[in-house]
Image 1 (cartoon, rainbow, N blue to C red):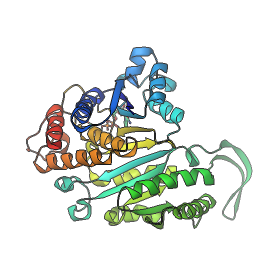
Image 2: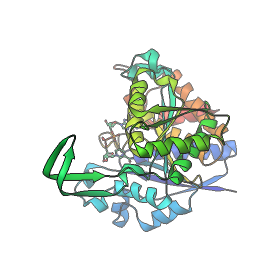
Image 3: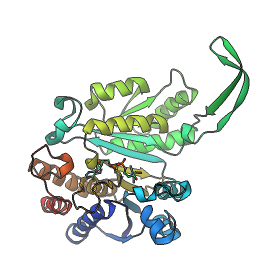
Image 4: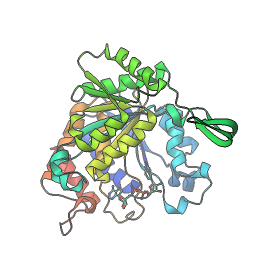
Length: 366
Ligand code: NAD
């Protein structure tokens, strides 16, 4: 059956890198037997300009009806003064909530040719290939909140008679832990079959449940080796010896922090894709970078994170890991041949523009 893709170009460099993704999809459809169709809709600032809202109703309906969504980026200085509910990022949050996209997959991959872009020594990061699976709709960001004045507030052995106190609650149910664990085990099956679950089980009740449930789910995945790590150690290990990891699964807050550390290890934001999935495997795929208003309209944006987002979409929603692998191999080939957009070029090195980089990846696909 033909699978439906919704393209959301958004703002800034979004339309420029979406054009490259569309070119790639056309080639995959016409020459590689990919059975897909696609449409485009405005979101973010473009949604506000077209329909007065960052997530126009027609865009939301199209998102619900799609098997996969490919979003470029939203935002720009011209929208910074809009009220919060009309800001471009509301478009993204609206889709995440409406589709129940509870798992966030962020690979951190460093091609050997770009190893000196990292702040770590090249030998520690060359060929780095890890995947952080972050729970996206639960935990402390969504738990009960409370702010107010409390009497007789305890600080260690001290009693403060009156204090302003703010509370956020970290809460996880076995249901939420089991479903994110399953996503992570499934992802590990498609990769190196090693899963590290990160928690703080020596201190937090919610982490104790997290670990218990992950161990229960592991029974269904005897082919994946499971380990556990405390979050403080995981942060340290990510910068000490990142290549020890394959897939990491963790809660919303720990994942927020660890996935940014992992992304920074690669030193090149224009290269990193990401995916957010729901239980039905429906997903939104997007580059990790923003709309880069400083270079928008110049035709020099790096389209690789967007093209690698197409690869993730093929692997995790469209069940075409073969084509995903082919795109990733094509990107490797293009980088090995020395082609660079400005953001990944060394000083003085020759650069190519967005269109030339997109063409080169398609040519390398064969
Ligand atoms: P950014 O990622 O847009 O840009 C940071 C720097 O990286 C800039 O110098 C930019 O030119 C460069 N860069 C980013 N992507 C690039 C690419 N593909 N090729 C070449 N260079 C690239 O982050 P920012 O400047 O903090 O944010 C700009 C706008 O993007 C803001 O409005 C922000 O809210 C929005 N934003 C959107 C998303 C998203 O849509 N998911 C994510 C982050 C930021």
